[in-house]
Length: 205
Image 1: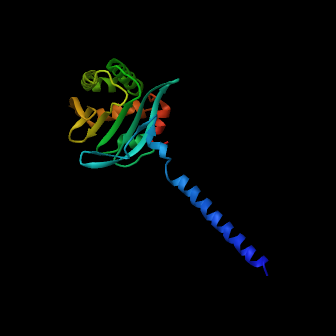
Image 2: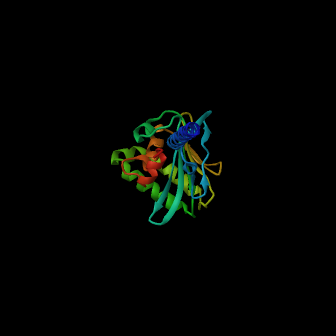
Image 3: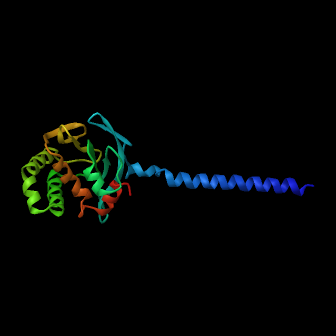
């Protein structure tokens, strides 16, 4: 008579364990890890408001050369995209946020900008972008030396073009053309990105 309740209890415990295990697996598969929005102590908001819209965080990544960690970055899009072509062609406002992890001089920014553009565009494309690239170079020069803790936003809105802010303060002038913002994003998401692990992260990988 005692074996029947004992057997029932074992069956009940087994069912509970199975349910708990399934729930744990589902939770782990469906929800991102808490660290997905935090890199090297830098935490990114899961939403950004730009152009009157709420933009969800598409992904985050780390720019690293060997053991030197340069900056953490985040990409905000109107709708999440896991494909670079989709992300680049996504209409509406967009934000690329850079968070330096070390001191970076403006000359380094400008050099990296030009290298990234050359790696991902033809000579003809660069000629068409040249005047606007000069505007961005001047803007990056105005940033001065970036420090850890600074927040640099590269924002695009259909009406305003590309705008750069440092800690919420606008720098330089807005640069027209969605094609120009796409060119900037190709530095990070193009066929020859500045860092492939960073590209993967910005696309939610």
